[in-house]
Length: 202
View 1 (cartoon, rainbow, N blue to C red):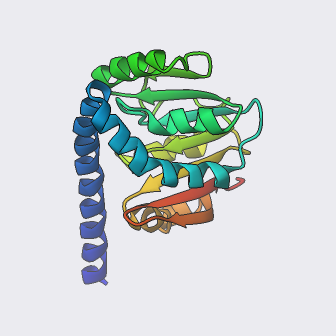
View 2: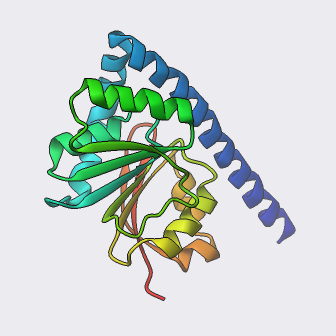
């Protein structure tokens, strides 16, 4: 029905708006965290329980390659993944200032041997060699990123897509994406969801 289609489109636009707001909100907080220890500890304390739960759910094994899309200025997920599992992590962001700050942060933490930060965009970054891909909550446009993941990842790759409430699961239920991905697990947090998905075989 036309009314239902209109509501669905409005919902998609609202969810996209929330991701954009999250992007800029987190950017400000993370810049502060790279400069002031108080904000770093605040964000790490807030994020650690959620990220630890996500790392456990991904069942990382030694030597796997992990890609963190949208690592931001304070690459918390990259940091916690590298601390909790013997894997190599590459964090990317399409904000050059965020990349420089994140590179400095990783160097200050003496983690350059296990974490690499690069400039890149999730819509076209080469991802075929990665075993696990972590899509941050601030990454948008999510539909374009998912289309890239659907065609460029290895078939066995595990993907964790962070969402605000049910925006990711709602998008994945649309016919286009339901034909491309299988939802393997949904982790629910107080203010977000983590959706673990895999590519459907053609």
